[in-house]
Amino acid sequence: MQTVETLNEGLKRAYTLTISAKDIDARVESEVKRVAPQVRMPGFRPGKVPANLIRKMHGEALAQDALNSAVQDGVQTLISDNKLRPAMQPAVELDEGYEAGKDAEVKVSLEVLPEVPAPSIDGLKLERLTVESVDAEVDTAVNRFVSQQKSFEDALEGHPAVEGDLVIMDFVGKVDGEEFDGGTGTGMSVELGSGRLIPGFEDQLEGVKVGESRTLNVTFPEDYNVDYLKGKPATFDVTVTQIRTPKEAVADDEFAKTLGLEGIEQLRTLLKGQVEQELNGLTRTYMKRKLLDQLAAAHDFEVPPSMVEAEFAQIWRQLEHEASHEADPAAALAEMEKDREDYQKIAERRVRLGLLLSEIGQQNGVEVTPQEMQRLVLQAAQQYNPKDRERFIQYVQQDPMAAAQLRAPLYEDKVVDFLFEKAEISDRAVSREELEAAIEAEDDGIGSGHHHHHDHDHDHGHVHGPDCDHDHDHAHEAAPKPKKAAKAKAEPAEAAQDDEAKPAKKASAKKAKAEEAEGDADAETEVKKPAAKKASAKKKAEEAEG
Image 1 (cartoon, rainbow, N blue to C red):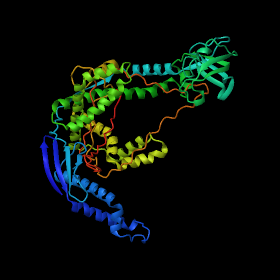
Image 2: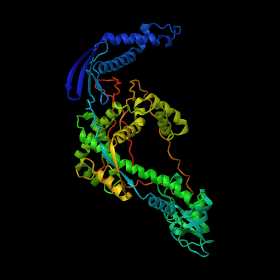
Image 3: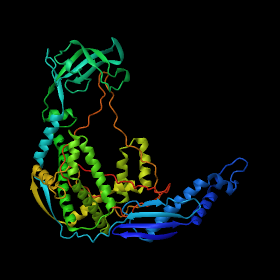
Image 4: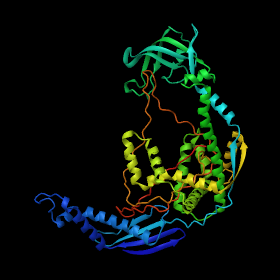
């Protein structure tokens, strides 16, 4: 194989590889010998089919495979011999004039990772903001929890049902005067005003009393989950057997016992752990943002445009998704366009921080242990159906990119914790409101003063640890799909309507998450036709709510 460098400018490299026809033919010959024992053909004993017949029958496919493997090996050799560290998947293009039996000329272009300057991690100073009134936060959490627990008590005799009451009834449904399958039931309860049943059903129950019978006139929605009922008018003969009115819950031992607890103090203890975890998360979020601000301010180096473009595309897709759920999607998109340049800068900052954190981790021996990685895989496998969990585990074990996606957030946390230990930290007690306001102030992103729509981005610097192995022999089987939540069985009179997408809350200019750095990119290639380019897998975004 001959190699000629055609471009060496900044982080961009380009080469022309010439793979001889002799090399390709030798690979075909080797493959013929390998498959010959398995080939079956009428008139020949197993394994005795002549090589020339195998070539005649399968020559085109074997030649294509040989070309693919030769190109793949050539790109691997190119990367190894030139000590390249690809930032993204190299682009490989076969010369359009290539003909079988001739030398193959292949153009390879890529961007390499920059040499990251020795990170400056001495002299870091951070302020740790902690919430002083944890007990008051627990009180608030207890009261909020109690207020969300609905309980009911039997209504007074003669009480007419109103919105918020729980009505228990027997019913018989009819379409065209005939009872229909599944339209009869006893003891069904519904909270008036909940909107759980088909439109008009709950409204016509208002004012009903225990023992009263009514005939309700309704129309099944066009998107009802039973085909023969879609859009059909129907009647329901209902008899109310019980009415229960809402009972205001009180944070006392009696309430706690209804939950199976010993008393209200046990509920406080349980909620205190959640409150402390949440407050610690806020404290860490603020410290981490301040840390990344200092790192970003102290380091400036060229980053691969391809990584920035990929990161920007990820940000933009999220913004478009959020905009689609705004009251006025067109206006939201127009607002986004005004800040496109700022988002480009955020993407660049993400990538730079990712490369920087990766360098810091590698220089200081930060790593994710095999035991920690095993826990990550097992945790991630829980989102799949039991029958798919083993497939998922095998997929992660075989695909370095999938493993890197799981490893990245933990590795980032470990690098950040290392830097926290190096920093000089001062403590200051604040209220929860002050801490949240401080975090919100940090959400002004790159200092442009603009308010953006990237609402749940906390400027992560996701990185790959040095233990990230980049095999070039991926298993290309797709990962199994996560299991879906089981849908509750609808009552006979219940409208099966999809949950409406909730409008996204208006986002502010949050600092973006740094793209994890690839210490070595997967250079696996495949040439099927001229100008074919194989895209690399995009790392999954791990977003945290703050």
